[in-house]
View 1: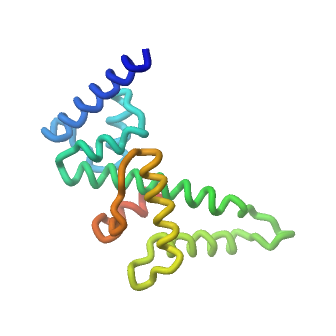
View 2 (view 1 turned 60 degrees about the vertical axis):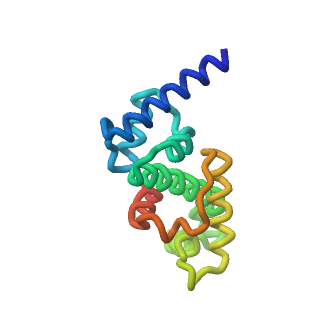
View 3 (view 1 turned 180 degrees about the vertical axis):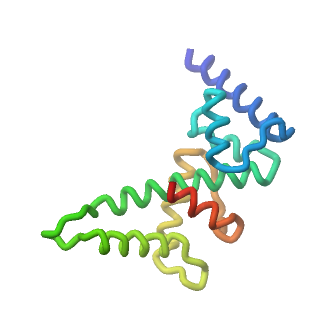
Length: 155
């Protein structure tokens, strides 16, 4: 039963990738790609397969951007979960915004400013590998559109 379900899922993914490669389906944003996946009954967890099987660069970039954004959101959620507005501990909205901004600067730091950001990117790429079965290159920040990634993270 499980193998049959996996076979159907693999066939659906292969058909989607074929449609993406022939531009029968042409998502321009990660949100549009997500809608296409859901309309075909494909889980977001399969983004890694789509990323590795797709032949068009824009499709791969959209998939990688979404994978990275989801991994960064998880990192921020887990890493900043201790923050809550609490006047007794000194956490105010202004302080929380400073922490989040500092976190984003660390995540998106370019080579010359890297410090702890390498550790954060190690977490992001490891999460992408485990959850989405895709290996993200270490120099991915220089290869993708950061504005798109940041917009995706902020959704």
